Length: 199
Image 1 (tube, rainbow, N blue to C red):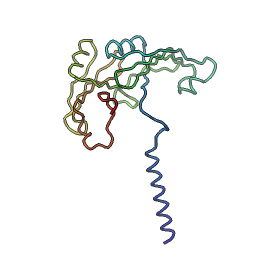
Image 2: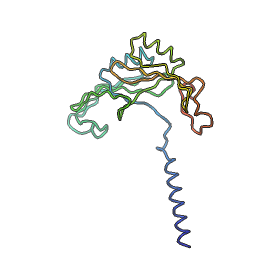
Image 3: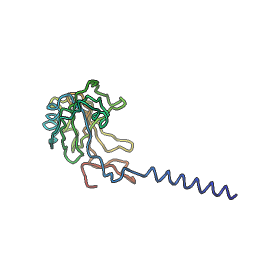
Image 4: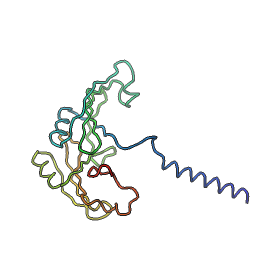
């Protein structure tokens, strides 16, 4: 009986520790600061984000390279001879920042992933009116997909979405949920939203 109680106490402490570990975070983690994207042409990318999307350029710097050692590989996990020709940081409204990279590297691949590819990604911008965003993007010659698509069922009900693409193929999205989403009723954690950035 004594061993059974000790085993139960051990199991409880183990599972309790596992529960606590799952609630851990990086010390001092406050939120998402930026997303980094490698682009084929820095001027094209900056022009697109600033003159079409409406972001603002904050700073640019570079180049970075290491002709003799493995600094680039050790720091960034890229080919040791990779060169970052330029980095440009942009800010888009009340969201986090976007960091644009112009790289050259001996092993560089030109792969533009679809949303369904492993490693595929997109950037979503909150807008007040997705239909107005689509009309604007179409008028600027930006490739848009089907939509605006209102989501009417499930936890995301209340949002309207539209996917579009940058000239070099980067996937982007316009999203709006002016009255919130269905999941919010009774949710313990509510997603951060640029429409109410302090919430």
